[in-house]
Length: 375
Image 1 (cartoon, helix red, strand yellow):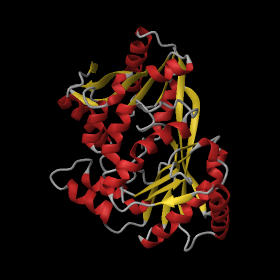
Image 2: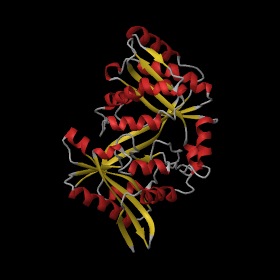
Image 3: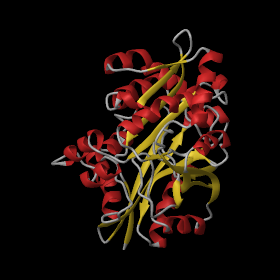
Image 4: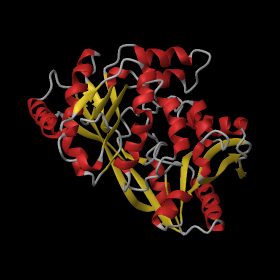
């Protein structure tokens, strides 16, 4: 017997909700678990500042008492009001290969969205762009990353059977780290420095980095990403939250800020050692020994680096600022022994961003999709 239960968002319930995904993918060599505590914090109304402008509901499917699926329904009121839409989102979706399970889970969220007056549902999406988004549709035999979703190939078939079609696609690239800075990058970077009076700012002190670029960094993200698909502008409360979470973890060598002659931030590039293997070994938990694997992932030897974030002020886009970022970052990649670099999600239509990878040996190794259905 199949039962769909609405899950009250207590921390205990959310741990079970999150743990289902890790259990479903046990033994899969490509799946990278999220940190259980991070997902619980994201899903909990008392922790995630996105609940100031989001509504959410959680459902789990049980067959004979055993969990067989999960899903979240989300309404981002900020995005809807900005674009005059009535969209709901589904996310945090996982299920066994059983059509009854997927159909009833998705119907539960659709019914909830209709009750809230929504006209369309899209996903998988999170509360904001700081969450995982996009269902994997190509690259199932590629190791996942900390910042992306991994899912089984059958998910797409289940959604399409229920009337969901393509809304947007993202692509990802794997680049070889060159043995030296590409000559063209050096040439463009030097021109940009002189023409626009830009320079690289580096930090050795974490407290100073937080004080000088913490807020400007996230305001820059809002400027650079505004207008991208379903982008949800970060509030001051969210910015404070993410400054504490992220800037305390970064290797400052891998944070490159570009500032103008008045020391105003115009570009940022943030990389992080790939945490994929460390997260797999930790099974998404800090204890009892997960912290050791995570620390080794951050501090130990690694042949892969994740390009977590690149953002450039709109008036400086397409003017070579990215060359200046990588002129600084590539020597650090070489110093730390990275052989490969992973791009983050890029909309398939974003040719400006993808063009920068032409200077490296690269391959597009993953594609993911947001689906939609009119309600």
